[in-house]
Amino acid sequence: MSPSADLLLDWYDRHARRLPWRVGPAERRAGIRPDPYRVWLSEVMLQQTTVTAVKPYFEAFLSLWPTVADLAAAPVEDVMKAWAGLGYYSRARNLKACADAVMRDHGGRFPGSAAALRDLPGIGDYTAAAIAAIAYDEPAAVVDGNVERVLARVFKVETPLPAAKKEIRVLQARLTPAKRAGDYAQAMMDLGATICTPKRPACSLCPWDQSCAAHASGVEEAYPRRGEKADRPERGGAAFVAIRADGAILMQRRPERGLLGGMTEVPGTAWSPGFDRDRILADAPFQADWRRVTDPVIHVFTHFRLTLDIWLADLPAAHPAPAGSWWAAPDDVPHEALPSVMKKAIEAARPGATRKRK
DNA sequence: TATTCGTGGAG
DNA sequence: TCTCCAAGAAT
Image (cartoon, rainbow, N blue to C red; front, side, top):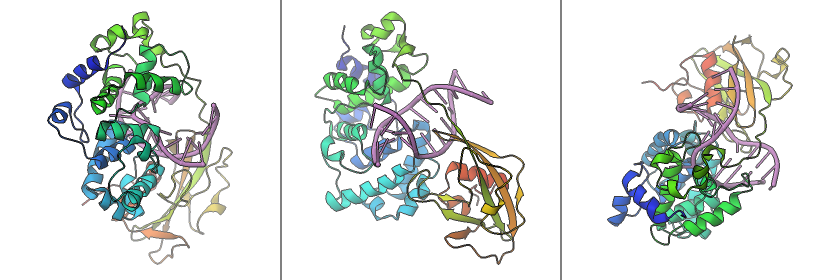
């Protein structure tokens, strides 16, 4: 028996997750349409990011910038600050660029088709299809990690990812219903997130259990096939936390492109594979009584593991900031665009410095 | 097609 | 402690 969209939609009507950015199946039947701005904002935040992590950021962004016009009017620095901690920071820059483009090229309204959405910054194949399906009920083939996993299992796709993507897109296009395309897309994601999970899928609760080839053979977890993952190399570096007598901390901005692009950091060395822990004081931003914090900060990025030595110096209140850097006052530190690794570095030198207090 | 992009939680 | 990985996009 082949999987049917109707069976999945019936399941979704009963088990849809309630999410802050979602218009549920009952509301949709009542004619309520989601705001494309909210759909877009949530979809970009959800790229490679868990629902749990996204929720507070989604609420904060909506509170700061209720409409795409509000977001377009904001300085990109404010957007980076609000995004700090969520990761993949080019998303924040593209988010702002996309809002600008919507205002400038589309009269303040998001384009009404997946094809047109696809041309906007930060919107790829998946996000374009997801917005078109969810916001406009366009029967676009939505293929994300959930869909890949579900369909690879249902059809026992032997091609390993990511090569199997094309094949899976064809399957998804064939399955996507002409009506309720938005509910269908969200149903697939709920199925993948709550039933057809990577480990120990709850097949007994699955609406497609009778049509799943992997389940029939009891080999669900063997799909989707994947190529072998690259190992994570080690890199080392040093960060210099300069603290002025009034508690201010010296900061600078990272280059726009590349890792943590455009985010705030404390001065430091490059992060390199052959880092020499004991010959780095020449890289300090200025001469001072630098002393090394006992334990380095360990931080794991997607493609390498970083061991970061933390060096600390106390400076007189009058100490000038080197060109391109600034002193962040204690009350401002928690509001800087600090990525998590930098929060860890500062916390290692001065516990509590990055926590918001009143 | 293969890399480069974060982060934190689960098992 | 370690591995995996979560609604991918850009280059």
